[in-house]
Amino acid sequence: MDKFRMIFQFLQSNQESFMNGICGIMALASAQMYSAFDFNCPCLPRYNLAYGLGILLVPPFILFLLGFVLNNNISMLAEEWRRPQGQRGKDQAVLRYMFCSMAQRAMIAPAVWVSVTLLDGKCITCAFCTSVPVETLGNASHPSFSQGDMKRVLARIPCKEIYDGQELIANEVAVRYLRCISQALGWCFVLLMTTLAFLVRSLRPCFTQAAFLKSRYWSHYIDIERKLFDETCAEHARSFAKVCIQQFFEGMSTDLAAARCHPPRKAPADAGEAAEKLLGITDQGTMNMALKSWHRCKPPLHLHPPALPSGNGWAGEGQPPAHPPVPRREIAAYYSRV
Image (cartoon, rainbow, N blue to C red):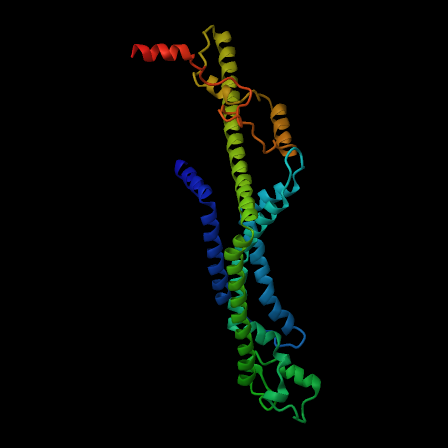
């Protein structure tokens, strides 16, 4: 049990590195999922576009949502966004910073999926095979093909085994044309995502350094405050349960002693320590009220440290000096004796 607790504490203390590792694993898993995925284009004019774009866009959307689900801070963000105003205001900049940080990590796996899919070229070939420029690459003046027949034949380009339009356009020519366009789009997408990541990670703090530091500080504060509150609640619940169980067995011991005429046993020494940790909250109703008060009206972020005495008058004004002044006569008498 202690080993699992140490592992859990390690993951909590290194949550950012852990989430980066999870995002990297999801990115590798998305690439592996695509390589293991059996792509089967329907080769029908009505369904090719929907199937190809669905494979290109739907899995990234699922991976994007999964990246939010695996992030522990999503519940903290929702709680901070939906909590009542109370004595503590809500800074929209901090909420945006938290959301953007989670969104950046959640977008890694979808970006990898889209990049691998475009570079592979199967989805684009399936989705846009009916849009191949036959006038440029093939024989558009073939007399035996109507417009509908041409669409039906072009829709079979991804299915090489059933393609029967070699006299219209060669299958290898159409596939190479569509795959070339898909790979060009894939490398453009990689370049775009890399540029955006560079701008977000490197240039944003340079232009708004003060706002960036403020948002990052208070986002860390919200995270740490929630962890400490959970730890305090867990410690209070442990002390509450310990005192409750001890009182139950003390009552049973008293009843048995009264029935058998034996003196009751003394309470353990740590019972008083557990009772002190309850901080005066010793019943269910009071605890529920405290939790509800924490949710509705969190304490303001304004601490009141004691004023420090200073000789220049800017701090500790109106307070007596730390040491009383020594009279001049005593100083003169001291130096005369020396």
